[in-house]
Length: 231
Ligand code: HEM
Image 1 (tube, protein in one colour):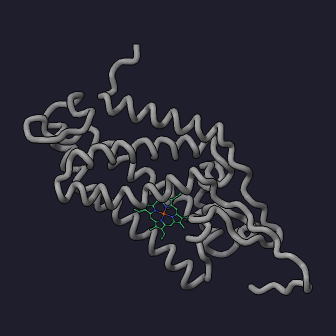
Image 2 (cartoon, rainbow, N blue to C red):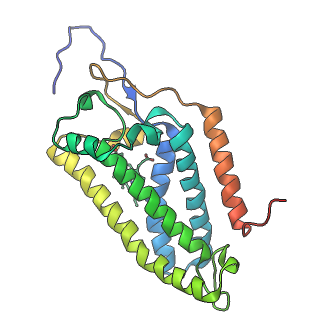
Image 3 (cartoon, rainbow, N blue to C red):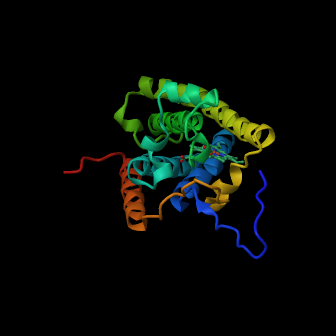
């Protein structure tokens, strides 16, 4: 869509879509998933364990941010029922053109990606064999047979995570190629060009953001220590 502007008139400033902490967590997912796969394939276990725990911390942060973050980060903003998803797919969702953030379909893809990564990391915490190399920090809490099963599932479930990531990338390419929508630039810069009737995201609440980061990091650290009793 091209807009004509009066000579000398200024372009409206870009509007905020994604806050900095959401973008940082997103690009960390995009980097960590392939690196974790590589470290497992090449048996670089010390880094696999360390980075897996970093991924756990970032996932916990993203979940907290889904409740206390900026508008487009909130689960309440993008997790919608099947009726809304179907209306969106039929192009009959009122207000869809002036909405920012995840579409009702992308909302479910977001939940699926976060849940799959969480399940994968969760199984990794218990995985390994104490008599044969590296183990997850919670491995001592389960028996050898349970750990063995979880290790196998941890290996196989990676294909679910990878499959969802491939679908995710295919959707982004589809939107760019067939709908002319560049979703990647806002995920990089946090902003998109202004258009009529579209209200941007609110300002970044840094104090709340740092508190969420601190809680998530503290939780991941506690897990790293093997989840000792807190009393
Ligand atoms: C393993 C790799 C990846 C994973 C696990 C992943 C995961 C996710 C997740 C969980 C979200 C939701 C963001 C949130 O609300 O926190 C998301 C959104 C998004 N991702 Fe990725 N991502 C990956 C790779 C990529 C890559 C390589 C690109 C770009 C080339 C990309 C572009 C985007 C965009 C544009 C969105 C926003 C979609 C929308 O507008 O709703 N992602 N991704």
